[in-house]
Length: 457
Ligand code: ARG
Image 1 (cartoon, rainbow, N blue to C red):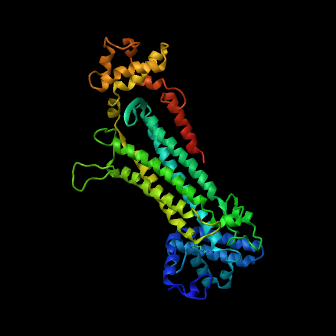
Image 2: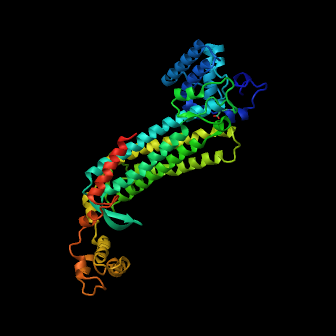
Image 3: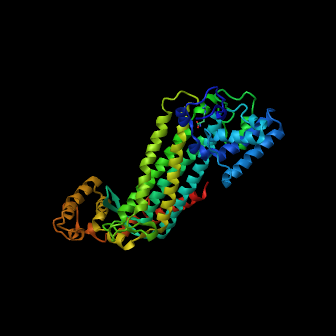
């Protein structure tokens, strides 16, 4: 049973074990320790600046906090038997430094303290994730540079559609991930505002310089309203949403890799180090990496739902429910980082089968080219489309192939045999010179933009 001496508020009665069990959050807020120690050191100096502590007291506290930080990293100090990491730090500091330690919490509440450590930690996790996304993007760019001349079919509805370059497919995934970088940056900006100095709910009674504190801790600015600041978890929602979207994108890429590595497609082979075997079937080589990445996205959507539902309906300011805000963020950021590292390895090391891709370029995917030739002769596109569609049924039914069609004497008006002359995959790809298209120049422009984006911060 938690003893009254260990509660921060020094309650008069002993805490019921059921409440103590609910209250305890040490394991889930241990990842806040480093940020809490840094923020507390800045806070001690802030208190000295507004005359609450002497400079010597502030330096004793800051030094003591940095010593704890060192010991925590080295594993020589590991708090146990205490409600949360914030209480652990304060009580250990007081144990070591007596009354000076007991002065640290002046004007501060765990409400603004927790929010500050959480924002700092969320910001750092986002920075790691941005680096992780960029690493996957860099892998995609390096493969695209090598595969600019590899031709393959594109697919819509998972049916062969029109010819493209493999580099174009790789860059499609690059630009999906670029939106994730943008979302991460925006979530980071949401997190990057300082709540410290808001007190429990109504602000700081000793006039602490919050702009100085913000600068000291690398925040863009202090929050505008103490009541809002202690209960705002929008940034948590934003970070988990950004994680979820990135995980969805990785899941889509993973799904394509799974399909491409089937014997039926055989566009892609997994290196042994990135695949697994079956415990029963000696013939199997399984794309577990991609399946596991695909599998991360689902639970992450659960974490997004968790945080949104947690916040819904809470009165403004801090409510204790908010203690449950950390696990979803730890899980979502952790899952995404692992997934990014796995997909970086996949993007760098899977083998593309250029021959299989080229041989999947069946002539029927040039049907749009034939329609476009009619357009070039002045025939409205819809009519041209109907004429070509009328004969494509014969190809789909297996009665004719596209080449024999070209020689058929019964072509529907206004098709003529010359419309099928010298049809060519590379030429179809090269006609698409408009921005974002498949022509070599257009794909090179994508690569150039990608390299600039990767170099930017
Ligand atoms: N462990 C708690 C949390 O993470 C600390 C905040 C407690 N604040 C309070 N007013 N009881 O939310």
